[in-house]
Length: 124
Image (cartoon, rainbow, N blue to C red):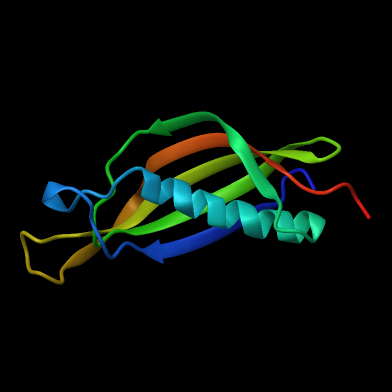
């Protein structure tokens, strides 16, 4: 179970702030989706998010970006699972070129990292 990883990619369609900036809660929502799949894969249950120990916003996310979220189990308790999360930007729009221009970022830019705990029911 330790080392089990789930990856989701998403095109970011909407912004929240001026300049097409996306709010930080967007990445946290994606982390929740990845954690749900992780719990299903490891425990056969959606589980519940208990909380974050750390969240760091290290780069902005904009509408038009393509982001990849990963969630990996790093510690296992009786009912708890510690999960490391990362949200990286793989593509970024280039509005200075045209409305639809975009580029692949090599390497991807890490935007958000976090550590959290999920809980699952006692094994049946």
